[in-house]
Image (cartoon, rainbow, N blue to C red):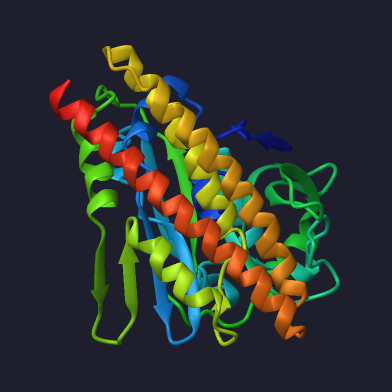
Amino acid sequence: MIKNKINVKLSVPVKCYQMYAYPLAVIFKKEKEAENWCFSNFINFRLARNGYIVDVRYTEPRYEKCYYYSERLVSQSLFLDESLGNVKEFIIKCIDNQDVVSLFVDEFYINHRIRYQKEHKVHQIMVNGYDKDKNIFYILGYNENRKYTEATIPMEEFIHGFMNCPVIANLSEYIKIFRIIETDKRCELSLTDFKKELLNFYNSSTYVNLDQYEQIYGLKVYDAFIETVNDYGYEYENYPMLYMLGEAKQNMFDKLKLLECFGWDFTYEKTLYKKLQNLMQSNFKTFSKRIYIAKDSKRFRDVSNRIVNDFQRIKVIEEECVYRILNKMEYQ
């Protein structure tokens, strides 16, 4: 074929991390079933601390319960020495087979990216189409204005960014291949799974593995984040994590609207979640300022205290909210 392009969804509930937005771009091609599946996912969080590195993400969604979605993995390093052949032809073949592909590239070489020709940074980019006449790939990701969007890139530039990635030493850095499969099983909205996830979030937990890699879940994430804010030593692995926490408030608001279809009244709880969303947006802006004033110790401390105060309020409000939701679902 000369050209081929797989249509995917740019408007999905979780956009701030590409690791979620890419599979959701495929999953939401079946919108109603995707909404049912999403209902009991993207609820709980985990904060990981390894030394002074802090990372906040959703707990892993249960993709195995999205019955029409398939994800396969291929070692990226096998293409760097062409053990599996030419990666350009591999991408084209995947798309011709109706598979969307996510690869790690050095964004220094990728146009319309904030790090283009400025900074070497390995990041995932999804490819959902090609045009051999124009010699381009269609790609998804965050552009230079931090907008999640579709763009085009010359094929050779993209392959150059792929081939010039650092040697893959981490098993998490692999090519992902996504597709929709035909199945008779349907994704139904599950109140049981929703309650289980929300209860896990409410109860919280802490886990330390053999490498002293600390992972904190649920409402305890707020406490753990507060501990790091006033310490100059901590570095934040993923800057969008605060945006994610705010995005989660809107997601919960939408879940409550769905729950009301079953006869519950969550008017008060929805009001609280709108308040939480506004607090998180304000907190995100404050946190952004903190990054640029780190050398001014007094201003740094003042801004950090504002973040801590906001997070303490957010935790108290959300804890009440989640308790009320679980209580209504159990007894009303």
